[in-house]
Structure formats: structure tokens, C-alpha cells
Image 1 (cartoon, helix red, strand yellow):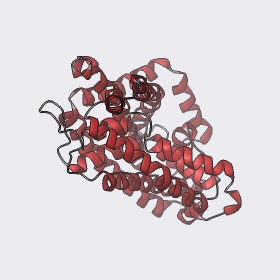
Image 2 (cartoon, one colour):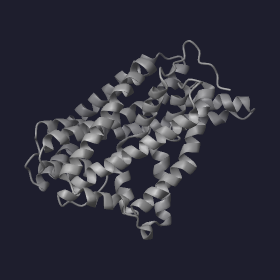
Image 3 (tube, rainbow, N blue to C red):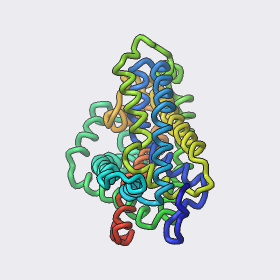
Image 4 (tube, rainbow, N blue to C red):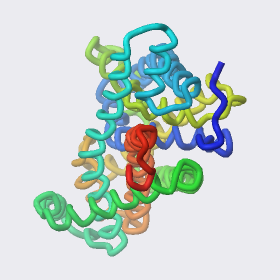
Length: 350
């Protein structure tokens, strides 16, 4: 039976707040710049099918277990695992599992925040039409200049970290809860708007074929491992996020239903992102890609020659920034909750 939350321990104000927060943790840069590409390169619909199998067979059960550990212990990952180890008469060294999750989140945030800073820079570049009408070489050079400009990178990195720290510092309900209730609907709306734009202006059928036309000859053992690895990464498993968010879940909320909804939304967003991105890439005669090159070189080139490119480019990079922010909040929260348990104030821990 789950422990009853104390008067001091926070609980999500609504069951949908938990779902939005955990979906925000799951939806990140990988949904936008990685999954659509690896799906297309590894058999399209065949890979998507294998990925869904991995999600349901491995991702969802492990995620349920992490949520259960968090809610039962009503604590951060370190102390939640430690409590179960003590209850089972096992070694206290099991607490290192939670500690490794906390450390993993901080390490991921180190590079995540840099890329998120780039997305903020490109919000303003898009809004000011900085790359509109320019050739591919010039646009690619703009990103190269940014990557070598330490002052600009430090500025946008600091802005992003400050936004993350402010939200987390305000607490679970006032900070994280309110933030995800605002940010996630905006993310969904922007994604649907970009999907419409891709349908109207892109090679939509070609994009669909790239992602969904099943080619089982490309589905190798390596493809299966890629699908399994992405299933673990996209659901934020093993990083303490799922456990600490689960500790804030009310006792009357169904864990299985909530986890299935989160996994479904995360997958849906990744698929829609691919359908919004690759038709624009193909319409511009560009090759599909992944990673920073797709976001900060290929897509600006595509937007630069399209009707409404500045407006929809701005919307796209706002979407990227929101996805990065919702994930970064979740990456730092396990560590903050752990430091709070050790006696630190949330503000000081942040």
C-alpha cells in the first residue's frame, strides 16, 4: 500500500497534471530530431511496429514499476529505493540505484541545456527573418558561427537554465504543475499547426512513405536494439524522473492507465513531429537527417524558401524550446527532491 502523503509532501493537484508533467519529461529533443529519422532509416512502418512492441513489452512495465516505487515511498529516487531495501531487509547499497539516476539526469542536462540555448537563439533568428532568402551554405555557416561563439552560447544557456531553475524553485504545484499545464497544451497546438503547414506546403506523401512504408528487409537485429534503446530513453527510464514524479501522484490515480496514456502521447508526438518535419525537408530537395544538423541547418534552409517560413519557423523553434524545457525540469527535479530530503530548502537546492 502506498504511503499517505504528509501535509508537507506535495501531490499533483489533478491527475492530468501528472500525465502532462510526465509526458513533458518524456517528450524531448529525441522525439523531434531522432525518432522520425531512425524510423525512416530502419524500415519505416516495420521499425515503428517493433518500437511499439518494445514500448509495451519493456517500457510500460518498467515505467509502472518506477512510478509504484515513487508513490509507495513518497520520496526522491534515492530514499524511495532505500526505503524498499530496508523493508525487504536488503543492503542499503541499493540506494545507489537512485543516486545513479539522479546523477544521470544532471549529466544529461549538461548538454541538453546547451542545445536548448541554441533553440532560443533560433526563435529570435526566425522571428527576425534572419535566414529568410539565404542560400544553404550561408544558413549552415550561421549555425557554425553560433557553435563557435562562446558569449552567445553562454547567454542563451544562462537564460534557459534560469527559466528551468525558476520553475523548479517555485515547487511542485506552483512551479512544475503550473508550468506543464501551460506549456504542454502550447506544444500540442504548435505541433498540430506545423503538421497542417507541412500538409499544405510540403511533400506530405513522400514524408509519410519515408516514415511509415514498411520495409522489413531493413529491420535487422541492430534495428531492434535501436528501437529498444529509444523506448527506454524516450520514457525517461532509469533517470529518477519517473520515480520522483510518481511520488507526487495521488493514491486514487491508476498507475497503469496513467503510464499507458503517457507512453501513447509520447509516441504520438514523435510520429506527428516526423510528419511535420520530413515533408518540408523533401519539398526543399534536401536529404533527411537527424541531430543538430536537422534542427539548425536543414530546417532553416527549408523554412527560408517557403511561404510563411519566418512565422512557422519561429513556431517550430518555440516548440523545440518547450520540449527541451519540460524535459530539463524533470531532469533536475530528482536531485532537488533529494537535497530537500537532506535538509536543504528548495530554493537553495535549486
